[in-house]
Image 1 (cartoon, protein in one colour):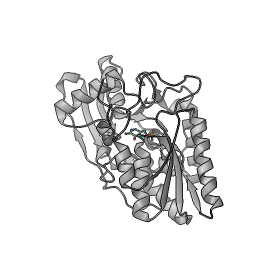
Image 2 (tube, rainbow, N blue to C red):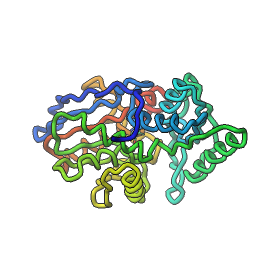
Image 3 (tube, rainbow, N blue to C red):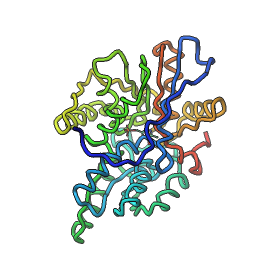
Image 4 (cartoon, rainbow, N blue to C red):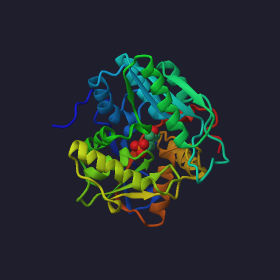
Length: 322
Ligand SMILES: *Cc1c(COP(=O)(O)O)cnc(C)c1O
């Protein structure tokens, strides 16, 4: 028996073919609609939260603390789950947290509106800080947790993007929704539990899972392996090695949290062809990568694009300016 879950999403999400002959006759393209998870405007985080929130409740937590960029989809969806369950939700946010060696991207992020409006609606207590290194953001979140504990609250700390063993488990289970088999599954990747969960589920099969990274850090794959090892020891699912993880870093563009020209082009293109909305920070970059790799002949056959959501970001004030 797996870990306990509560129901938040409407599952299974739809999965359907995309008729886009422009992408070539070698390709049979399908899309998994996790933009339609049916909870708090959709997105991949609903699957992780079904397990994470069950654990928060089982631990008797009265407050959760997480962190992210100010347009974080995870903060929005965690906030929605917490308000429903009567748990206080705190988030340490920076407009554009960045990776120290690479420095802060010179291009700007996606600004106000979007998820911030929903955060307010769900009653998320936003603690806003000046842009800085990710490690500084993690420290800020820890300080908030300690202050709450000093005030007598029982606190659950939820890492960035909900990438914990339970987050992985949500995607390990999601794979079972597919009724077709695919040569490739392509999705956006960042904190890793989406990709690690899916990769684990297809280990030893002919299906290749490819993450298109939305973070520039080349050390990400090692973090994913570590995460997978923890999930394996805590939940008994198979562990991944470095060679099991396909992560492509070529489509990040100007940096994490900043739209890319190719991504926004893909976003407009897919919207106008199909009505489907991608988000500029994750899924649009992943779809741009998919189109480019198909074009180069590196991906072909029966391909599933796993749409991870992010819809509210298109309503932020500068998201579509490129
Ligand atoms: C969080 C997120 C991702 C990345 O998923 P991870 O599990 O963090 O790698 C991709 N797309 C969207 C829209 C997201 O919100």
